[in-house]
Image (cartoon, rainbow, N blue to C red; front, side, top):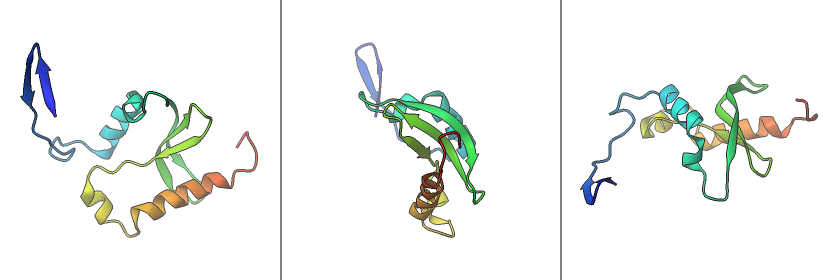
Length: 109
């Protein structure tokens, strides 16, 4: 990664969120305010919820709707340690959250 000033490029050393003393909440807030940073040119998302609880009391960090009307669940982990020190695999958490939305019967829900 480089920082460009005028016609000069300077290499920027990568840092982790933990080195920046950022919490998951900090990252969540940045992403909530700048959701386009994870979208490509043909995609857009609208954040419709934050820390939304499902029927099993699990919470997805951010809930969005994409430009095709799909529900998008965004789960944030600050770094690899947050993923490795979980009781269950990170992928299972995502599957559980997605499954809770799959059981919605009515549009109003």
